[in-house]
Image (cartoon, rainbow, N blue to C red; front, top):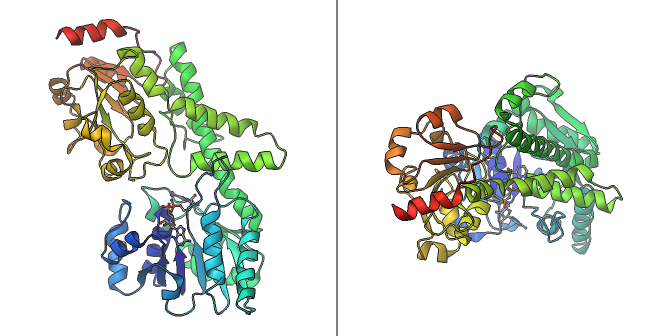
Length: 461
Ligand SMILES: NC(=O)c1ccc[n+]([C@@H]2O[C@H](COP(=O)([O-])OP(=O)(O)OC[C@H]3O[C@@H](n4cnc5c(N)ncnc54)[C@H](O)[C@@H]3O)[C@@H](O)[C@H]2O)c1
């Protein structure tokens, strides 16, 4: 099939590369000229396991091309995916301007029947708007070309995007036309092989399914974070509770991990957008508001624990931070908990030494230059370099190399032996037995308030 993908970000690039890998001819269009120039040279704008070799081999086979404008596309595409960003607008609703711009471009370009597929996460009713915008552009050109607009929300997880795309649990497709249905089946059957896991529904149902799915997953995380706060104060270990409830088949174990808050490009913005949709439709979003509020509070949990141990004034304190991306397996730092922690620590006078296996180039770009110039923030070449003369390790992202740390080496290189475990990766007994103070999330104890004593001890040393 001849496929066009508009937007070459996390979703567009994975979609384009995977469909090319399946033998289709794919052109990815992105307005970011720098991104496209690099992609043409085989340089990817993002870190995603397995994506780079897939992009390069499909480019070499002539199945995958990158361009900056629809006018550069060869031949008429049968399917055009819209995979541009839908970030939060100022009021929290989804900013749909990139989707509308993509629709205008499509209307100004197509010459034959095609299926336009909304893969971006868009508010309910967006497909109708896309339909109108394309129709208007065609009218301006004096053309009457048939096309269908389909909703096909994406459920891939960054860090496992190729696996998720090639072996999805299910595929959701919202459409109203039989013609579009047969094209979408042709497109996806090579991936799923059995049509039972392709769920066809109305367009608006599919659009809402995406928001409801993300909001449900975010709700489970916020729920566990709330229970973890209670556990902490009542001498209960949330990790046992997590295993206990996760083994209940009515509940299941996915997305029950408590931590220092969820981030990324999807959960926060999609929960906020759903709140706005509810408000505009006179439904009070009581649960959604609580999910969002709990998450904002949760991002303060690590700064608060640091305060309880080291005090409000962090001058003279060095924090070693492991993990900057919002989750392992990606370099995406959008709404990452590390941003809240680092900003708070530096504002209160701490020095931060941070390491991340993939996100350090992104951190270099988005964090204030002044922090680097003044030595307040240092990105280290190795995970253990972040701990040299550090007063504490703060684990923010549970990358695999952080899971089994060399405790003996850490003991030698750190000035004080304190671990704040923002993802409950470590066994508190094990860590404490090695002579470290351990503070996890909801592990049955709150930090001692031995603040001033501790700092005086450091000053005296
Ligand atoms: N990132 C994820 O894990 C994920 C998962 C599921 C769904 N989604 C949804 O998919 C959509 C895309 O997300 P993303 O993370 O890939 O975004 P992204 O910001 O990584 O990429 C979007 C790309 O679109 C390009 N773009 C913007 N306007 C354009 C236009 N008119 N023509 C061509 N290119 C244009 C931008 O330059 C950018 O490269 C969002 O709606 C998001 O909510 C994302």
